Image 1 (cartoon, rainbow, N blue to C red):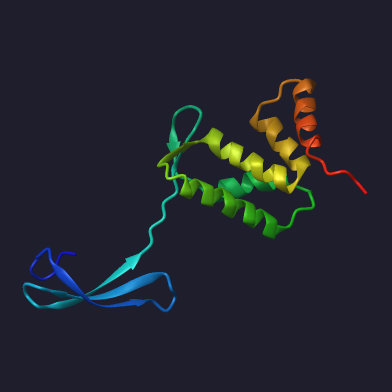
Image 2 (cartoon, one colour):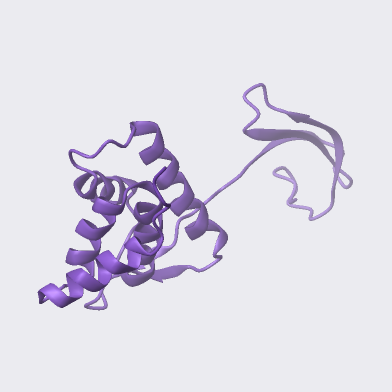
Length: 155
């Protein structure tokens, strides 16, 4: 850490505390050259990857768009808002932990389909039909058969 007074590169940490909110660390420092004291704050900076569209253009990640896609597929389906929030959080966590600076929309679409398949099979078929651009009935039947194999037997 560079001293703000004399620009010397070497400083000593005298005290470290976590903020009351728990979202930052406060450090009291002393410059070894000029002996002046100062305080620094460290905060976690999480940045979502840039989304690369099919046409090659790039855009910032937007949680609102992700939530909107899920809500559209889940429209009039018996899925709680809490479950949708968890699905959004799960997808965002996967994007963050991937470590990639750029992610194509295809990858995001696959993550959405995984969550929808877990939440609601009908919503999964709705989303998949648009996402995969189904062109005939056979493609619908294949998608239905795919989720049908995963069905649990009724008692």
